[in-house]
Image (cartoon, rainbow, N blue to C red; front, side):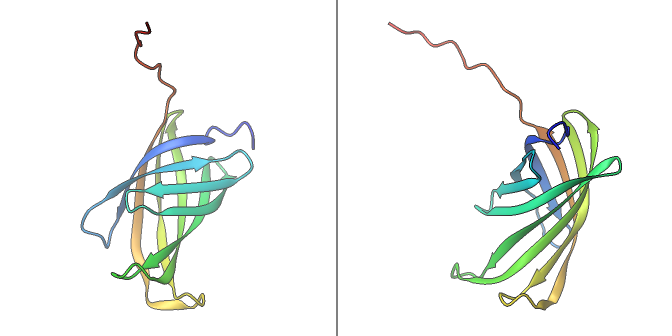
Length: 131
């Protein structure tokens, strides 16, 4: 997996159909098949990815919280990713919800998920004047 073009850090825009507004995050695809997402909801989510045909599949888990910040469930996100070019991808998938014991919840399906990703590039820092 070390030569997979998906490996690296990606800035992502995420839209869940059942949510009024989208949000942003960072996806990190490691060469060993591990995956981390952090997002503007202050969540850190963990998962795994594989190459599949001419794209990639990722599955990751997130904890859900009530208004008092107590964990009250889990969400499993499954995405199919297609690279548009070396620095851009789109993904589509679903989010399923579970209670803390792992049983599907009544509102199990949160709706389709769409993601657009742009690779994070190394940038030179601005010139710094030193005495």
